Length: 362
Ligand code: GN1
Ligand code: MG
Image (cartoon, rainbow, N blue to C red; front, side, top):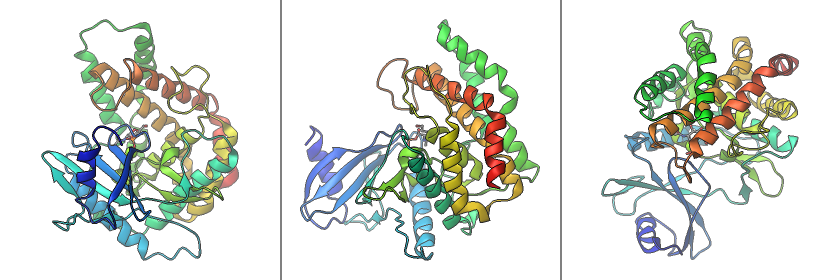
């Protein structure tokens, strides 16, 4: 076990576990929360997470949303398909679905067994399953009234808000920008007008607020280890009212980039049309009934805007000194920004083809 293990074991054992902890190891590679896999003596595994309070100032609301979601999905028959929603394990002392230690906020969830995730898609079938997973998730929550979910992260995916924050950060950046940052600044300037696209469509009544996942990137979709079929969407902290387009865009931008989000400084990154077709086939196969013609009209915009937005978020964080996304080296967020901006360029260059894929699936 890692050096911090005794403390982590004590935290895990504050929850109602079926047996003593035998191992705790870091799990996944999230940019915001700390995640561990907990093994217990009777063979059952769990997911232990410390919620990043700087990002989620009211983590109790996050847990409330998770409960609402889980109650809702449990009432939905899945006609023999395997589909799991991670369940919350209560604190054995307080009965609450979390434990606090000082200012740390911890929770324990059930583990989705016999399932894997990938950081980058390698086959069209994986892409189809990732799309199908998001489609099933949307269809399962499509009749969950958005008012039942708290806004746990105000401003999340509101691109004009990220642009305003970027402007402020840029103005207060005292140091000279390097050439690669300068390239990013120019990139953002040229696309400033894009920022309100989805919000304007919502204000005009063309798109509606609904419950969304908020972060359905490829490695948040669990695939059955033996069949490859999508069996769960994990990382449910950003489930809240929003536009399904944030989800569709996020799923496309992560699934159709074969080099993945950590692809150096973006050299060679492109948006893969074959994977795009597969994602949308899977997605629409499961969620078509929940979508209007206007929803379909905005799928291209969603892919472009969410890629641009994530690049903007990474770049702003780089300029602000890496305070939001976890980094492992200087310039990491700048590299990540350039990956998303290269992807945005590739999406723009293939607009006609992407729109044709959507049209063929209508
Ligand atoms: C963050 O922590 P993680 O990796 O699940 C971020 C997402 C980004 C993602 C990019 C709450 O998610 O919005 O798309 O990084 N989550 C939050 O990898 O900001
Ligand atoms: Mg997340």
